[in-house]
Length: 452
Image 1 (cartoon, rainbow, N blue to C red):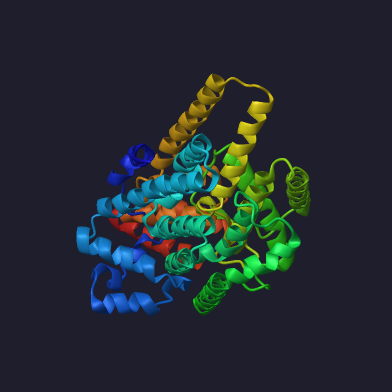
Image 2 (image 1 turned 30 degrees about the vertical axis):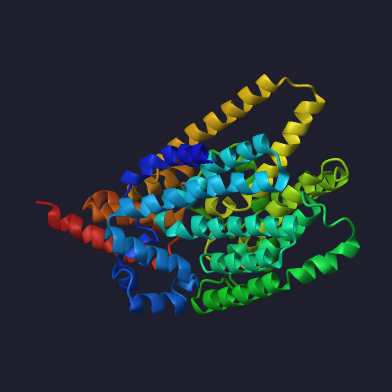
């Protein structure tokens, strides 16, 4: 467990020297007076009731306030906290899986995949995404306490599961699907859900958990609606949302297997050919049917797959929040189910095919090594805003927001000509971009003033 945490900490060590990025970090930290003031009674009360930036997540606010109290506005301290939580999550994931399945080797591999996958860089290297690592920490604690409840049948552990879930929901509403994950685990590995008749009593024992999730979902919808973050059907039609959801699932799968071309922002396309989405939807159905067909011999496949599908539902875009089609950070907790299915499936397949243990170990080590190298490479783009948005426009030259943000960074650097070119490009892509129009005029004025 300690070795896993140390490996993770060492992998993400370079982020300690990274800056804040000028995308949400100013709103959450640098320009937020209730965070900049550190941990005070007034700021703590504000965090408890605030729905600022279209979210209710008081625990995330409190953790950022505590960082200011400890480190001031030095980004090094904020990055350190994120790394420590990610390392703790990796160690905790191993402990929970070992406790659930009694299989040490496979639990180690799942934990290492979780530690080293490049899709998780965004959740760790971006200070604003504290809510990912923080909520997952308490989500994993909930899985651990529920496992103890199942194994001991002591109701105190179930009450503790309710408490840890409540705390996790105060960091990020992503955990609203956790009660459903617990039902999946009742089928495998716990073996409590053997037939449809078992569903009702098992769901009933989790009623407080479902009520907590319902309450948090209601608060989240209210916060996002009043904050203007939710896109209306006139802006993003239902058919486009469903099409994008199917595509997003397949994109997450493909980026899991081939993590290249990762970016901070993948804009939602407002014109889409629906054939790729239809193919993606058919692919999802086929995978689901295959895993279901194999349930008698490999029940973990359908359990891990449904974990992956279900925990992505809150962020898959059926309720469209923001202008992203999908995001790397959304895979942080859902990846656990997918990794579980892959590792157990590959391990059992290698046993059937009589692959020697030595070859299995070498293969696993090579995969972790490659992922670690890709993670280190992806990390470099997060060292400052300039490299982050430069990477985004390189990945997608039609990304209006990325050109605007890159121009804003050039403005901060007083590189007026480069800033003007970025804003002009953004306006070519979207002539209605008012912010880019305003900043283009400012850059041109500064450029003319600096010309002898």
